[in-house]
Length: 256
Image 1: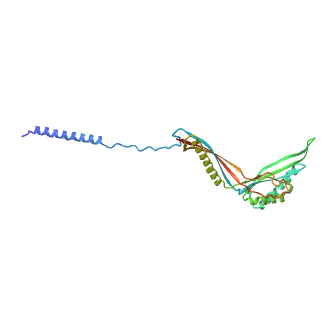
Image 2: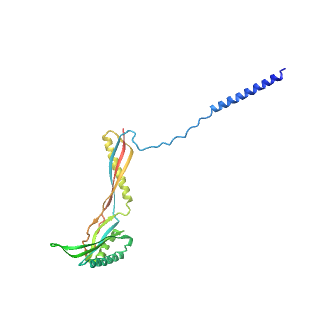
Image 3: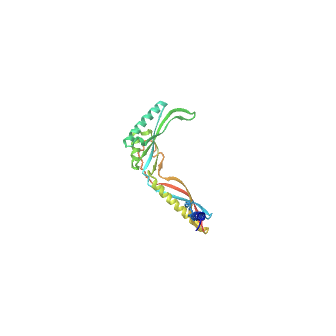
């Protein structure tokens, strides 16, 4: 029979073997644990040439519409021997003018004083002062083209020979559609030019690299001294066409 001491040695040996196996298994499990995968990085796509070849062209586009509003430039001028009388008469004229304009339905928000002046009236050789000119100018915003002529007519009746008409500027109230059309036409023009130059150089047009634009308003109708000064009555107003011009500088990639 095995002695008690020998049995104790066998038990200890078994415990050590089990412990060693557990440690080995743990090591194996740790070595086989799945690797942690980093999340994919977002890709940032830049508008840049991949070939290094680019072409820059200038495109021009026009958007047009019929004007539907106007700014009418009216004023009064009085000439009298002294400043006080000239200013007094001009002030009375302007009161009559404003009353006539208001009677046509024009609101205060659409009337703006744009000038007040007093100047000497002289004759020559020798130069002497023989009177003073006092004047006041207003700008009237007219929301319908059809109202321009009636306004001029009532202004003539209200002020007579002291009336000044500085001109009329016609415009389109909402230019959004004009601008959109002009931009589309300008881009189409730029694309056509780029295609021509690309073909001439043995390439074809690639991606868009950059765009810059310049916007300007053209056309329309303006009139300086319409109906002359005083007594001329209203004048027929032809709306014509107002236009917006857009110029774009566009850079494209030249692909093989």
